[in-house]
Image (tube, rainbow, N blue to C red; front, side):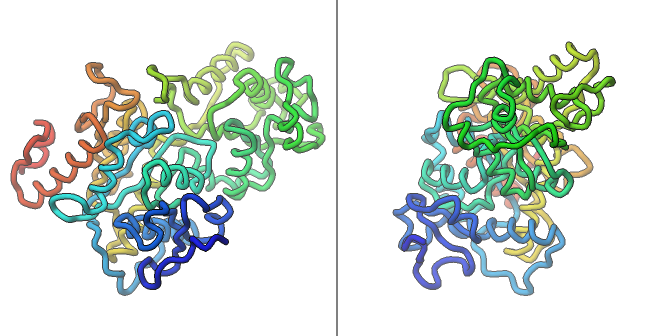
Length: 436
């Protein structure tokens, strides 16, 4: 293990290792509770350490024991508010085209105490981006924003899929680069993970127009699929080969109990299919939005109906699905329980996103549902999918220019609530909600 794992005694949360973002590996992060740290902060924890370490432990306890973990008899001293929290989408909000949006770095500093009130605010990241483990996303974002973060702060579109590992044994996992999605699925506890490459390696005629590269052939696992029953299909990340992946998926959907090479007479015997999210478009470095997993889902449903004459039932996770927001709520509740001794989530969660159809829709629908235990407040930024001057189908509580403006908006609103006065520079819709 690298020497960068060593932190000054008593300066970091006990039981949580501090790993350098420049030397840490996926294997390092998988061996125990960790926080990823930019080299400039390795000598002593930064202002971001408290939230990062506490969320890491909260998520670990939540996954190990469920949401019934009792609070510590004496919670540790905390300088972070428990009244409200932030949840951020990543692409189009903090990062665009692999590069940080300039205001994102300052927004994180503000949440970590560099603000006029001197308060720290907890935050998590909720992204529909797939094909990478929470650990890999943590390493990536730490480098991009030069901030101390932990895997426990990340909820990916496919994160809730880990809860299905006990239900399905042999599964097909689709999407992403190389073997990454297989690694993610196996890390979630799936016992027998098949990829499209495995199927093509067994029968090269499965996809007439796709041939495996030398590396793909080497990494794909040889087996006889005449003897394999695939129980479920999981699209973990965006497909890199729509034609080939859709052919294999359709073969399974129309099969007899997930056996390749067979055809059901009723077309209702195939395995269920799950998507990690349903974003039709997403924000990249390109000037215009690009199609995403939701488009693949729509294409498969249309092709299945064209071929069989029947409707295809599919299931999506991620935003705007309520399950993702429930998972986030449980994490924040566990964090509050362990840090403040209160067994309920923060009263308000500010969700900052760039996509009305997933971020804003999901936040609003969860906030209005009977399943929500607190207030979820949607903020739309203009740095990603949504563009200024257009009319979003799903209306946010507030629309701002950048993520920094979103952080300022929420913090002003919270302090105005404390003082029972009308905040300055807020939208009229928010002012009406604040003044009682």
